[in-house]
Image (tube, rainbow, N blue to C red; front, side, top):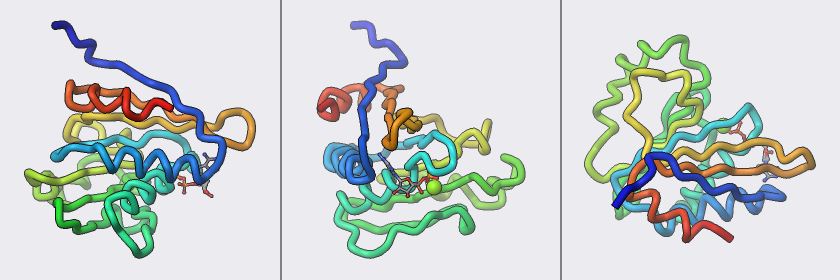
Length: 159
Ligand code: ADP
Ligand code: MG
């Protein structure tokens, strides 16, 4: 069997609810451990998708942007989620002081907003979600699977 190392699907997200829904849909089928990169400009919907994912896992409280804290941890019966936002990182070397390795536990879901700011210091992504304006008032999401495990998820997310 040959598996392309990069296979993508593109989904239309006409409103915020659609972004939250996609996060929840991912949460419901996501195996652990997994590393997800969330790409896209400021305001593209990366934190909104993360909120949908957390709510899909059963989180009831707020999901705040980790822009200032760099990382927000969440605990679930199934294991932790570590939600990173590297936007304010001065350079990737600062990640060494965060003890990044400690977050890559066996059963963790690790989300990275602005992975480009951590270049060379981050674990490889299993899945990249790239969000962009759709030219109207909504967004378009491109999901790229980098491993067989996440490749198997893509057909379930197609709507
Ligand atoms: P980011 O984390 O990428 O900077 P946010 O998740 O904070 O972006 O979202 C910025 C804004 O975009 C929020 O006001 C959110 O409601 C809105 N938004 C998210 N998804 C969509 C969508 N599919 N269509 C329109 N607006 C959206
Ligand atoms: Mg954000």
